[in-house]
Structure formats: C-alpha cells, structure tokens
Image 1: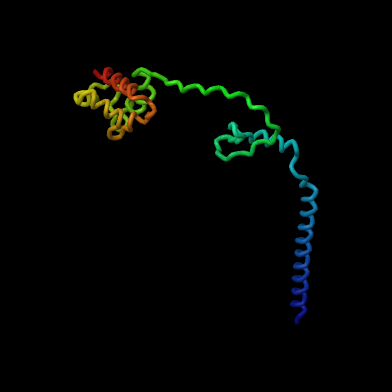
Image 2 (image 1 turned 120 degrees about the horizontal axis):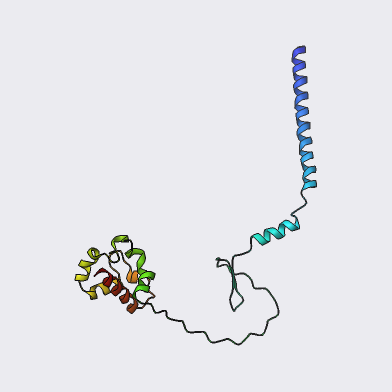
Length: 177
C-alpha cells in the first residue's frame, strides 16, 4: 500500500477508536449521574400527589363494601374490630311529590312544548293546538300517557302518576284556548 493509504487507514482507525471511547465514557458518565440524582420520590411530593388524587366521593354499604367516586369497583373494607351495630331505624316510606299541572309541565313537558321540538305543539300557541283539541281531551290524554309520534310515554317521565300527566295536559290546553 502507498503511504497515503496507510495514513488514511491509520487516521480512520484512530477516529473510530476515539468515538468508541467517547461513547463508552458518556454511557458510564450517565450511569454515574443517574445514581446521584435518582433518589426516589420525595415524601412531600407523595403526600401532595395523594391529596390531589383523592376520590370525589365514597359510599360505604352495610356489608362493608365501599364504592369510590363513580366507579363500581368494590374496595376492600378496612379490617378493624367489629363495632356493635346500632339498632336499625325503620326506613321512611317514599314521599310522593304531588304537582299541579304547571309543575308537571315545567318538569316534564317544557323541553319540547316550549320550543316545538320534534313537532310538539308549542305552549299557548292556539294554532298549534286547535286540531289536537278538536280530537277531544281523551285522545290528548291517551297520546300523553302512551306516547305519540316522537313523544315518549308520559314525556319520558314514566314515574309520574297518570293523574299528574293529565293535569299537565289540562294546563297546556287551557293556555291554548
């Protein structure tokens, strides 16, 4: 080989060795620095993170099952000595809320009948109600109780008694006459 080629091979080999040595040196330096810096989580940071991620709510059932936030994943109850169970009070009977026609309208009907949504006749608009009123009040009651076209039965408030739905129909009919 010529002197020029020998010089190139020597310089190139030296350059490769220097780059390899520098790479190994940087890796060792990184490992050393990471051991100095990585001391684990700070206890103060752990406490503040735990405070920030507290559940919004907790619900505990009588059998010890606990539901956290809105998830339905049961949490294990805390193990402690059983406390004497207090005497159970009788459950209160559900209170039925009785509303007049206006109350039912404002609760169940206003969404569609105030705006005419899905073809619903607008509240107090005589032109919208005339043809419906001409069919008779019994037809209006039936449509409101069983549903009609886009309107679901009882306007979607199936828990309301039939009498209250009829009061709402009477209220809307009276406003349209």
